[in-house]
Amino acid sequence: MVPWFEVHINADGTYHTCGAQPNPGRMPFAAGFIEKHNVHNMRLEDWINGEYQNRVRLSKLNGVHEPRCQMCYNEEISGSSSKRVKENLKSKIDDNAFELTYRASPDLAHFEFSRANQGLTDILRPVSYHLSLGNECNYACKMCGPWASTQLAVEGLKNGTYSGPAKLNWTEDESAWNHITDYICETENLQFVHLIGGEPYMNPRFEELIDKLLVAGRTDIYLGFTTNGSVVDINLIEKLNAFRHVDIGISIECMGVLNDHIRKGTKTDKVLDNIDLYLKYRKESHVYVTVRPVPSALSVHTLYDLYLWCVDRRVDVMTNILARPEHLQIRQLPQDVKNRLLAKYQQWMFSGPAPADSNPRDPTWFKQHIDSEIQVAMYWLQQAADPEKTTKLYNVIQSWGWFNNPEISKYFETRLL
Image (cartoon, rainbow, N blue to C red):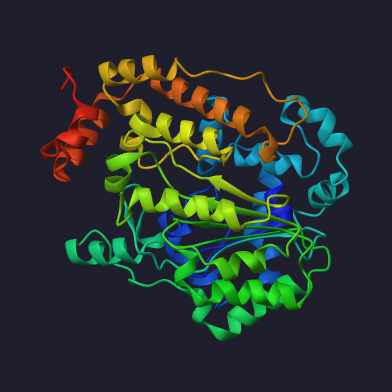
C-alpha cells in the first residue's frame, strides 16, 4: 500500500517510492530520475500522480516482481516481518490471507480506482511521510554510504570512490522546505511522519518540523525518527511526549568493540547509556524506544548479546537484514564461523508466539519480536555462501586492519580461507 499512502524524500531531495528500496541515486536510471523527480523541480502533488508512481502502482496491482524490493523479499523468505507486510497491515491486509483480506480492505476502492485509471490515485494527500532531512552525520558506518553520511562522502571524495557533493540537504531550499512541510501539516487525516538522516539531531530543521507539527495541532499521529544515539535532548523528549505515539529508533548494530568498529565514530557504552536516558524521560504509555540494527556478517557475532540487553530492558527490536552490499550478508561468512554462531543462537530461550493477529509494530510483544529476529539470524547462518563473496568479505576486513586487532579478529577466525 506504500505507493498509495506514503511519500518518501531522500537527503538530496529526490522522491522515492519506498524506503526499503535502494536510494534512487544508486539505481541504473539515476541521472534522469534525479534531474526530474526531486523537490527542487517537482511539486509533491505532481509526484503523487506522476508517470513514475502511476507505473509503480499498476505494477503492484499486477503482481510484477520488482528487483528493487529485494530487501522485503529476503526478509520474508527468512521469516522476518518485512516493511511490505507491516505497511499492508495498515490497510487491514494480512499476508497470511492476502486475497481475502485484500478484498475486505477498507482501502480496496483506492486500489481499484488506480487499476481502472492507468495507475492514477484518488488519494491526493497521502497520510504517511518518510523524510530524510540530510546526510549530515558524525559516524562513518561500514554498511552505509555517502547518501546518508557526510563522513563517508568526504572519505569517498578523497579516495575516488564517490563523485557527488559532500553535503546533501534538500531542507536548505526554503521554497521546497515550506512546500513539503506545509503540505504535511495541512493534511487533515495525517497519520504517520518518520524522520531520518544522516543523523537528524545534526539538522536544525529536525526540531523545527516537530515544532511546526505542534503548532498545526498535528499531534494525533504516529511520529518516528531514527537516530544513532550519540545525542539525547531532554527538552525535545518533553515535546515528543505531546504526540499520540512516538517511536524513537536507535541505530546500533551489536555489543562491544565490534560495534565501535562497525559504526566508526560511536562509543557503544555511551549509546547504551543514552538509550537508558530515553527510557527514563519518555512517557512510557506512548513514547517507545526501538533498537534498529542492520544484521550483517560484521555484526552477527555479538548481535545475540544486544538482543539479551534489549530483553532485559523490555526494549523492542526492529531490523532490516542487510541486503547490499552482498559480500556483507550474514550468509557470506565461512561455514565454520557460521557453525560456531549457530550453536550460540540455538541456546536462545524462546517464548510462546504472539497472537496471529498481533501487529509486528506493537512493542507489547517485544520478546516475540526478538525471538523472530533470532530465528531470522539462524536462517541466514544456515544458507550457503558464495565463495567469491566470502573472499571479498575477508579482503575488505583485511583492508580495514581488523585482523590486526585480536579483540575483533577472533570473531572471524576460520580454517576455510
